[in-house]
Amino acid sequence: MENNKIAVGLDIGTTKIVAMIGRKNEYDKIEVVGIGKAKSLGVKRGVVSNITQTIQSIQQAVDEAESVSGVKIEEVVVGIAGQHIRSLHHSDYITRNNADEVIDENDIEDLVNQVHKLVMLPGEEIIHVLPQEFKVDSQADIKEPIGMYGGRLEANFHVVVGQVSSIRNIGRCVKSAGLGLNEITLEPLASASAVLSQEEKEAGVALIDIGGGTTDLAIFKDGIIRHTAVIPFGGNVITDDIKEGCSIIEKQAELLKVKFGSAWPGENKETEIVSIPGLRGREPKEITLKNLSKIIHARVQEIIEHVYLEIKNYGHETAKGKLIAGIVLTGGGSQLKHLRQLVEYITGMDARIGFPNEHLAGDSDETLSSPSYATAVGLLMEGLEKGFKEEEVEEVVEEIIEEKPEDSIKEEVEPIPEAKPVPKKKSFFEKFTEGLKDFLDNAE
Image (tube, rainbow, N blue to C red; front, side, top):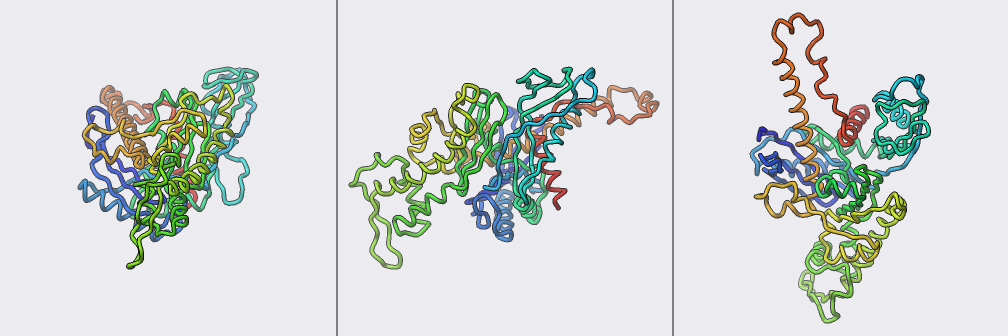
């Protein structure tokens, strides 16, 4: 395995933009060779609100990552999120012309294309259509219908929908910053690949990614993504509440939240007081930690209840939809003290904090294993996976050419690439990103 395959993940968030450069080491772990961070000024609740400022922030993060690593960044894997992303469930079917022939990829493609023709709200576009369970004639709960006989092919779909303008704006910012778009991934899915194990996805798990502007939810069951949602609240609204409630400036409110904040008000005594310096010679302000945690608790409870409503809508209380692995919290907002206990109290489900350190090399910087870098690590993983898959395809093609004697190559009329080297079924991530890239190219 070559050690020089480099990939770049670009996480365009509401509070920060992170560019992460990495490669795989001989143990198949990710070695981060450079990271760049910039304050995100042009993004609100996951959506670009100022193109110029976003381009500048991307360039700043990329420049920092380049100077640390000494690597020139050309292409990036970008995450897409924001309150405009929503998902819906849809069932559809096709009647096959010849029931005596087995079902193949083309039948599934016809069915997926039929779902793509669904009429959406004005300005919305279907980003991705993901088949879940199939039904062939009267036989239900089929995971893989290819190779079966049947006249009617039916399926339940998870349809991801997004705002056309928001997706195009992200693409424009990246290209205007002088970068190529290698791949686009839904951010909750990138975070999921960084912090969730395959066992958890099989057993049933809800990933809650608490960012600065939004809280993303991704629910997995039987190894398939079942539900996605974006709640338009994140860590920033907690900071705003502290700012208003304590009459202090935003910078002080953020520091208070990070250093002394707690999601559980019973934890602090009335006598615990923190003093905030006054502005321009004014008297310092004294704030009790109990009041601070009450302000935080009220807003965090609202966010968790919104997320829990989405989990209920998915149907986790049914026997079939039970999430055995519970909840995994990640993102910068998940580092709030006693948040895990509050989530367990409100939902009645087991919870843990998700760290992306499992996929990182042992000698990685400790700060990289923070939950706030989960999305960036996930995007980097996507980029590296894609790079290695392309490399495998090239190797297979080379092997085919080497195996054939020169005379037989000359005699053959058909060119070598016709020997399709990888008839491997595409993963959900590959299909998703290909669909998104086609959509972006067509939109321009």
